[in-house]
Amino acid sequence: MAVTILKGTIISAPELGKLDITENGYLVAENGVIQGVFPVLPEQYAGANVEDYGDALILQSFADLHLHAPQYPMLGMGMDLPLLDWLNAYAFPTEARFADPDYAREIYHKLAKELVAGGTTRVCMFSSLHTDATLILMDELEKAGVTGYVGKVNMDRNAAPGVLEETTEESKRETLRWLDACGDFAHVKPMLTPRFTPSCTNELMAFLGKLAAERDLPVQSHLSENDAEIEWVRQLHPDCQQYWETYAKYGLWNDRTVMAHCVWSDERERKAMRDAGVTVVHCADSNQNICSGVAPVRVMLNEGLKVALGSDIAGGDHLNMFDVVASAIRASKARRILDSWETDFLTVPEGWYLGTSAGAAYFGEQPGFAAGNPLHAMVLADDTLPQPHPLTPAERLERCVYLRQPGAVRAVWSAGRKVFTAG
Ligand code: GUN
Ligand code: FE
Image (tube, rainbow, N blue to C red):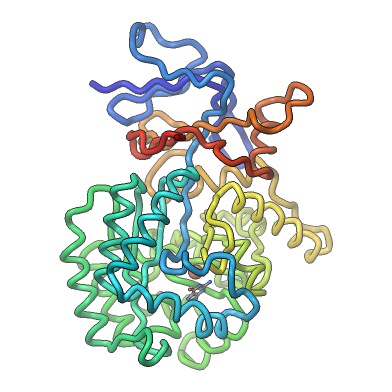
């Protein structure tokens, strides 16, 4: 039996707003499955190899539940337009480059490496519409040690003619070809990915809904991100009272559905998400960069919705989930101001929970370093930051959320495997 024992200052998020802290503790996994966090090493592990990280923090690694891999080349650029214009001007032309498998291989190799080095080990990710590039993306994630779901994007209308488009027939055929080729990956699984309602004909939506049911596949898409988008959906589906119903109508709305943004989802739409068990992915950077709005995350949490975080690169300008957690906290403060100081902002432990445990829940994990979870963890050193006076572990975590330090992530485990060691 393979035993992994990590020693250090262990911090985890067992529930929203709470941190479990064990200084000089031991995080133990057997065959990649967490057995527990112990202040003293249990007798049965006496003599086993202990990886001692001294004073460093041992943290859960991140789950990024919404990002666009083929937008990685435009990270940090082109954020001067609202959503629909931004898609046409920047996102679609960038994604079109992934028709070239060599280009896809080079970019996706870099992306996968950067994810793992930053402590992101679980994802729900959009590819482009290209089947071959999507398989290359899955291969690179698998090799780097990233786990989770990837989707070949479906978009058979309102795309970029001559640049990035597929017919309904192509979209169906390529989706089946892609699914047939996904069987080889152990840790990266397929997820159906209608880009968003304006991108998919009713025929395609119906096909995807049927496929989701027949093959028991999860679904990801976008919902109520931007006012012009919502109005467009209203015109395309006059029979639907609200945006979410355009997904529900076709069987794309259940407890494995992941919906990015939901900035403008009102009480009725939020109730539909809660009732179905849909996971909302809050993408604070993107919502601000392309002027979509400020999602009411606190209200969603109070109402009992499942909420996780997404970098949404490259509407979002940060792939690093420390930044994404900080952005979600800041956005919640903007929301508080907009709400006349009536909603609470997210605390650091709450933001940390959303970036780790809440996302991990989508993959069936219990919160924190619960026994039975696959080992997803990172070692974080903050010794290059000033140490003016002794800090508590919670203060150190807070500072690491806000301050980037090159090389601070020293080691990362994903599904029990050590996938990164700082060089
Ligand atoms: N809605 C449809 N496609 C996209 C995309 O690529 N990014 C964002 N932020 N929203 C979308
Ligand atoms: Fe997105």
